[in-house]
Length: 379
Figure 1 (cartoon, rainbow, N blue to C red):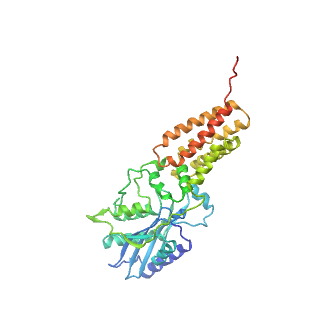
Figure 2: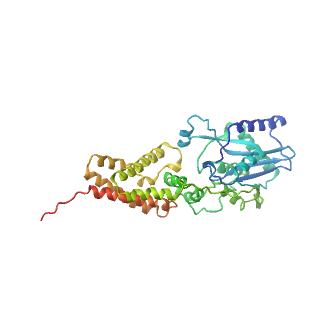
Figure 3: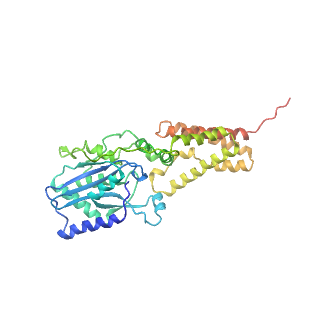
């Protein structure tokens, strides 16, 4: 979730190699070593909406203060956008000096919190060795998954693996869906909120039982016990910034309602057709991405009932002046709207798509009325 310049990867490898070569083996941590989970605050860039998680290893005797970061990716990857969309983009682990890491977040004005893991010396060493082994091998690469494999879930996995069981588990909001959990994170970014609401499919409507967001991990660590005591110490605030919610003249609900209101009030054939064409093309995109992408979050997208690719057929019949089939497809899509509305009425994104449901209803009713066969009245 945190983008990292590729040059830092080279620095991290050289840093750890110098320690490894210097000792001829993995660095033996001193009794003063501390290992902590770092949680970084929310930002206003797309990659930072949800915060970030990392692991800090600090050992003053070895003059070591390093942050291990599972959220790195390389913009120079060939076909970067296509790989990201498909879901086979390789993320990787890097390490930074803690000073550089903190400077980055100071510059971005994002808060940083630290929770020290209260582990025995043997477990500290085991975790440290595991982090280094991953960093210096091909295991540092992993295929990013929005819910199942990200900077937070990977940290949970490596700590649990070190402890020998699933010690860290989610402690709150397990009765909420992933969609409901994600929705508030987009405050101040209306069209991102709308876009993720309509492109995500059924997976995000499952109960959010897995830790996949940084502050979920932070809150869970506050309550997690291991061998009869708390696994982590009290959270310390290393940097404290108030998140500034951005304001925009266009990225807000008002422009959204204005555009949809124009479609409703214009009562114009061309406007209706353009609106339905946009919906249909979005539907084609959603279906294509659902089949093309490995991201399970994009599969089985019932929002195509609203953004129906079949609207293209309706428009073709309309252009061909086939009133009978234009009418039938308009009625069919009105039925789709009713089914869709009932299905999502208890979903987190119901209210945000409701204006589009209403606008589509107006447009489709007008299309149906214009193309309904009139029965002549005989006197």
